[in-house]
Image 1 (cartoon, one colour):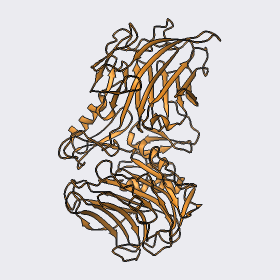
Image 2 (tube, rainbow, N blue to C red; image 1 turned 45 degrees about the horizontal axis):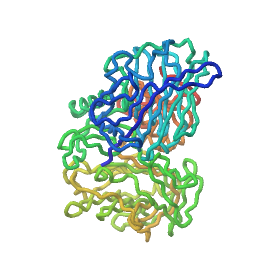
Image 3 (cartoon, rainbow, N blue to C red; image 1 turned 90 degrees about the vertical axis):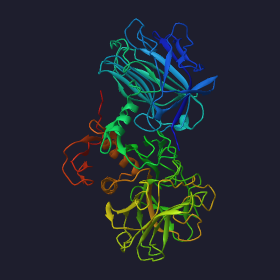
Image 4 (cartoon, rainbow, N blue to C red; image 1 turned 45 degrees about the vertical axis):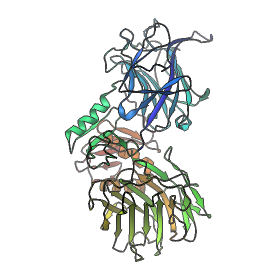
Length: 597
């Protein structure tokens, strides 16, 4: 089980008083040491307001004394409900009616990839916030908006060292007092070193006026959460209570749907699984699952075997596999003799949730091989294993393909083993083709697992000769032992069944992708040259629902649209229908700048 956790200690805020070129004077206006073993957290600055813990952030050892440990899935945060006059710090009592300059700093220890709010507050039409992983992994955002109009919005340059699970110090300083638009300044410091800054909006002026912060529960300052606080968990509970077919969005733009058959993991209700993408709500394995954002890993093979997904492990190329022109950028060429990629640090999909209950693996391949070629293989410590093989179905090398997932414990081994019986000459004709396997073994009873194989976005008929998986079967974490850890291009022992041909953009997801998603991935890659990261951006925009918007690496903006023409999963120009109702996404021209108010 993996539960995303963030630990924070010593959050300090300062007001900056500056005039002309004079040296700025820092005045500490708030400090939380988080040393109180109490629901009420004391502000160390005399006269400043305290805060109240909500849903149980707990004390742990910090850099200086104690720290607070926040678990996002439990909607934990600190509410500045003790401040009924000014509500928050930094405040609006500088005599000019606005938050014209200030600084905030804290020590943080986290490995979180999802968007997270460090603090947030709002007056009736003004907003002030500081966010981690905002709009993309690695980004830290400062946002100050006045009356739904002028805003100062800036990002710290991409740097993932702050979320490597060790303590780091972050400080943000800002000013927008210089009088005219585009002269506001935001500075970020990581462990005392200045970092690059980019601005998305900078049209504040010294005439911009902010009203006093609102003391209403849904607007006042929160530390460790968006200003609406517990609303996220209430939304998830409502989706679960609504039963099958129910879905809703949370404040981060993610869509959640009712899901049955989630592994209950010893009947611990409320357990977060699949890297934070699903929550079990009852002992039968029913709960909610996040739609979109499920990409776990992408090996682009553009000159290396690094992983394009932040925080996911890359691989090491063995025995001289070289690079050729790929479907998207470069690709890795395997000679079929002894070349492969060794995932030294682990594998994706992994088994941190107690088992690979569902998932998808896709890649572009170019091959003419008719031999048994293993393209993915890994084993756990208890001899459970997973493999995907081309030209292999019980040693019948006739173009068939095999997917094999075996669980060893508890008791005897159980299996989800499938293969495509028809000859697949279409993928081994020497041209690029996209192949994707999507599976589930989460329904709870033997015979209810399933596996689908898509070639160029089209589903192929498959047989499931062994389907004895059940929801109580457990896979150990994948092994780091050399002859068991994940291999790409050969079996885990790297002793035979080497792949012959080219491979590009091997990606894995923590959910079973749908037929429409499989088709969309092929279309986006084949027509627009999008890899799995860019394709996931497009799918996530659709998952956000009305108002959803996202940006791909070609600088194109994509928006959620309703009533689009076309076949679900297929591109129609720059529109992509993603459900049977004609809802989907539309791509705007490259270089378009959209300002969200």
